[in-house]
Amino acid sequence: MRIARFTTGSEPQYAIVDGDPGSEELVVLTGDPMYTPGTMTGERIKLTEDVRLLAPVIPRSKIVCLGRNYAEHAKELGNEVDEMPLLFLKPNTAVVGPDDPIVLPHYAEDVQLEAELAIVISRVCKDVSPENAEQYIYGFTCANDVTARDVQRAENQWFRGKAFDTSLPLGPWIETELAHDDVEIIGRINGEPVQQGHTRDMITDVATVVSLVSEVTTLLPGDIILTGTPAGVTTINHGDIVDVEIEDLGVLRNPVIRRG
Image (cartoon, rainbow, N blue to C red; front, side, top):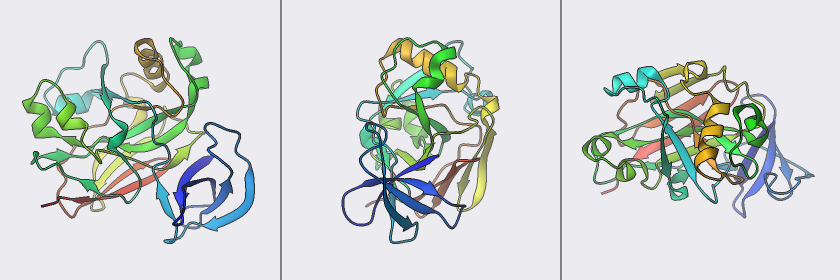
């Protein structure tokens, strides 16, 4: 089931996305189905240009990111694969939705896309085993862990390189049923593929990621975990259109701008 957050000019609403690509309709729900039992209102809205899809979730607590989870990506940046997965945080102010601009930070010259599968947590989760992790997952969405690579390389801490506003596009919706260990991930710039990977190549799989993160911090409903990016990270520039596509999930598209 696909769950979208959207607006037609008023307050954000939630809906089930029904239909094939190109002919989707939004089956409007009451409330936020992640926190309350959503019921269908009976209203159906065609997914046209009059409808603006929003980031499907704004984490109230945190976004935990996994670094170097694809061996080829670690290799292309000249890094070794760590025995213990590398974890870092992004703030919820980094989140934007489909078609929202990625604003390049003024202090960086080399900003790159990172196409990723994002996990959305459904309920309070602490010290869970990999075997039980699935029951704490609400669903999955496309993510772009936009990174100021020159800044990341220059500093020991990744805050300025990873945490700037608009550095985490999410969308277009949450897919609650996904064969997450067996889907393709593609990153495109202006329609040209630059990243092409597969979740089966992740060093640490989805269930183990949730378990490891829950050992460190209590995960709350709506928290996001990013699972790492495949090789092919590439510089994005003002005027580019960036796509993240995940098989059986959807396409997240964002323009790139530099202000001033």
